[in-house]
Length: 117
Image (tube, rainbow, N blue to C red; front, side, top):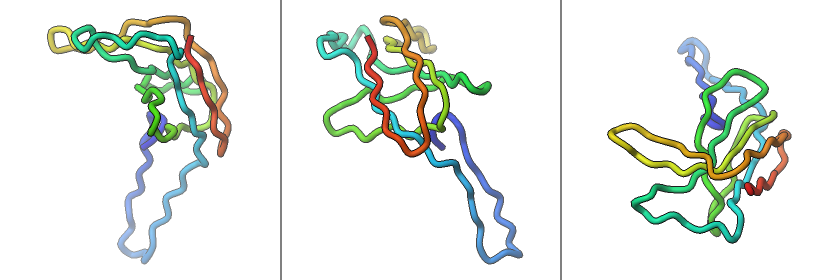
């Protein structure tokens, strides 16, 4: 699974090998502004929320860049990514936008750095 899409293959036991074909992914590193204040733990967590614009798909959370973070793997295409504050309230999750969203095009095999403002 990557980029909010799951790839599966049902193995035919008559065949000795199974081949799962997955598109070459794009890689993205998403970062909050350098001077962005880290929220207090009780206020919630900062996260990046992504929505693929090229096809109907559910939005999904991306990791924000940390010093030892590896890039997220995503399907190539156009995305809308925004910085959100994630809080659990009465057993459900609330995502509050923290600034304008970025619209980016991610290309197969390339690494993109997305800086949210």
